[in-house]
Image (tube, rainbow over all chains, first blue to last red; front, side, top):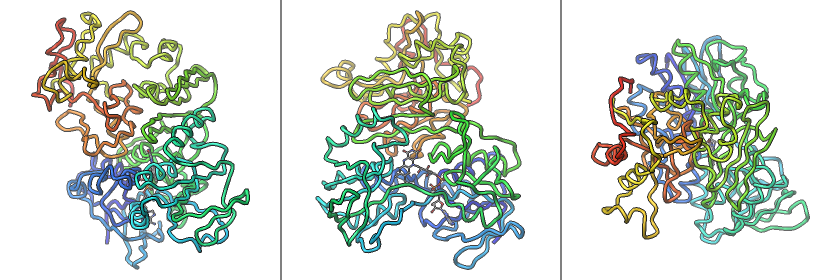
Length: 416
Length: 147
Ligand SMILES: Cc1cc2nc3c(=O)[nH]c(=O)nc-3n(C[C@H](O)[C@H](O)[C@H](O)COP(=O)(O)OP(=O)(O)OC[C@H]3O[C@@H](n4cnc5c(N)ncnc54)[C@H](O)[C@@H]3O)c2cc1C
């Protein structure tokens, strides 16, 4: 098998790449390899599927004719085991070899399960990353089941929200002193915690599981906890093995340049959760594991693979997510001067440093028009050129200089 | 293609367009019903009254729609120049609200879905905000932009 473009992974970054390639090259052959056997689906929607909000067909990330329209050959349910960058071949577990002209690694991440004594004796143990995880949980869950979730991050809490629909009795434990530590500060985390607790979820923080004996956990405080289902959502690790086998540079994730080309090898690009990005709000490099980042990087990779020249230079964390009807929108880093409004569950915190907006946390009714704040971060807008006081109170275009405002309103915007 | 444009000089900040927009998208047969009886239809156009000026803002149907690119569900697409939300697919995460640089995607009335201007393509094709503006402050016209 030989293709002009080969993509490993069939998710957000892959979609970006396919669409990026097709903007510039309508003819070149494209193959997508994934060990998941499904049509491209939205990973975050697995919790909505479990909850019953969407069906499997409605969680497809692209329409049913996506591969056909884009002339993509799919090799699904097949695992890639190594890449030989000299012969330009991807070796599959099945023994097949797929030759590429240009290769994208869009392999995402896998769940990290910390070693815990007796974990293998647990029945009904799941991660919460894939469609197959949901299928497994759906089979195992009974009304009123006792569920233990390890990890009070986005993934663990999305699982909790979905399982509330089965009337499950839920306990969430986390080593951290607060829930959602990656996106909320302590004060707002506590507001969200109370909101989620009101829906019957119990939290044990500063806590982890020492050991398991079948479906009984012994916690670090000595307490024993019996459960029917265990969900581990402690964290994720990037899938970097293919990049390593090809001779690409890997640190915490795959290292790429701004064109998404993998450092240290030729003809190989990488995008999404498996890569390290340079965060414009902190100046540091880390993995930014979100859909917008995966898609944008995939798109840039696709443009470059097809011979155009494009760079991705606007990486920063951003999340819009809700739990039990309470929504949060966050972005960037929470450092510098803070403008703050806290009114029950309606919260706004804006962080600025060196006349730039570097981050924000919005909750409840304060999420309206959040994108105006996001754009200040993305475009690194000098806050002395806008009416920042007005913006702090309400996000609005009136706070921009007339010229800029008219430019937006009189044209198509053309969002940069 | 034809788009909705605002005429800042003529806008009095009466917010009438918001009402017409919300009504047109409410699915109610009578105007008052969209707003009374505990229902509050969501407008997809927003009149700003900050800094002593008034103007209406609605989706620019961008060349590079960040709402669409960032949508986690693949629920937003651009068809014939109009950026649309597939409400069957939208789960109301509001990543589009996070992404739109102009603040033009609204939180839906039920809190489960996002709402934005689709140029009244589903309501007869004539933008009701334009039709309802008695000051000529909003127009629907061709300005030779690319779709
Ligand atoms: C429950 C949950 C909720 C989330 N909610 C949000 C949210 O609200 N907003 C947001 O922005 N992000 C959210 N995320 C994160 C988001 O899903 C990821 O950032 C995104 O999916 C990354 O896309 P990707 O293309 O990089 O990789 P992935 O989606 O991880 O896809 C990689 C694919 O490659 C396959 N693969 C890997 N290695 C191989 C191999 N060797 N051979 C063959 N196939 C391979 C994998 O099986 C997988 O199918 C959530 C994630 C989860 C799990």
